Length: 128
Length: 285
Image 1: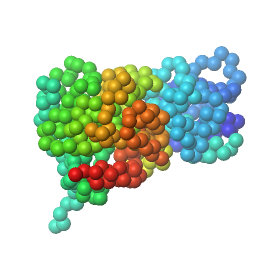
Image 2: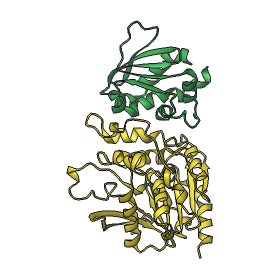
Image 3: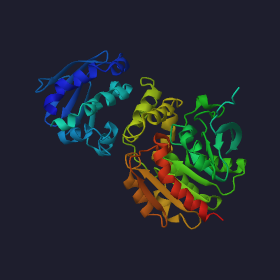
Image 4: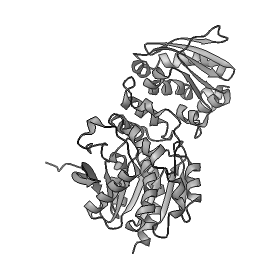
């Protein structure tokens, strides 16, 4: 994974009709940091319009989620172990850092939890 | 015409005076035998115990009772609620439980609470041990530190039901049956504005019982602790630490369960609860 995630995540998200519907009021650009790789993800009406890998020159984002690559790999296991199974669990342990204006993230918390968990079903952790 | 196939639980409304305040409480029960009084988690209600109330093996030996705390489920907030901010306190919680025990005339019930309910059983152990046959703390710790800004749970630019449901979803073990998982989340989505946050005032501040644990006497009343391995709000380590500080407390970590064992996976939870209740039942004379 992180190599493939820039292709995988938009595909999975945009094919998920229920997710897109829940995100229909969502307009935001956020940063997803996977260790040394950071992606700028632009969401328009619940669909991922762009997922740009770095390096970014003067990136602009509303909020950022940052975790080390091994932490995401655990999170993306088909059945993740306790503590790696939810963004809030990772926040509590310190594995995940949330930064910026978190209002869109919190107002759409289910959307973002489910969006970022999509690679699980796709067997993403095994791809590495 | 065939008779309707109702579930076993029957619910009624009980006017209850607590600390000079008049409440209207919703109380549900099923079965007969030793009273088993069940206390729901923060921001939810007594429906969390539906699986237990529908378990005939359990209800043939125990009278399973669950009530919705004031402000929760079908229990009303007190008159004048519209001007105040709801904040659960240890005093109000203990007094509500004891007022209900008295009003129902329960003689030495078993009391089992989860999360905030798992905390309040520690307060009951300190203040009213001899009134109970046994106390069971599910997802019980002496204290909990907040790990997110609780203001997110109650503000006009974030939907309260959506954020409360999404916040707690991760506290459910990944293997929970989807039907039970989403019913558990639905209860949170139905909570009144600020109620979950008000309960967490007790959970993260007012209910801190760390300094009083050595005064708990498990000879006066046995104390059992059961904690799900996927619970990061009250983790297995938290419950083990609690048990280590109370002589005679028995702790069990439950695999493939999270913060809402009785609601997220009742069948699996019952495999942990049955032996423990059997121990309590056979000790009862």
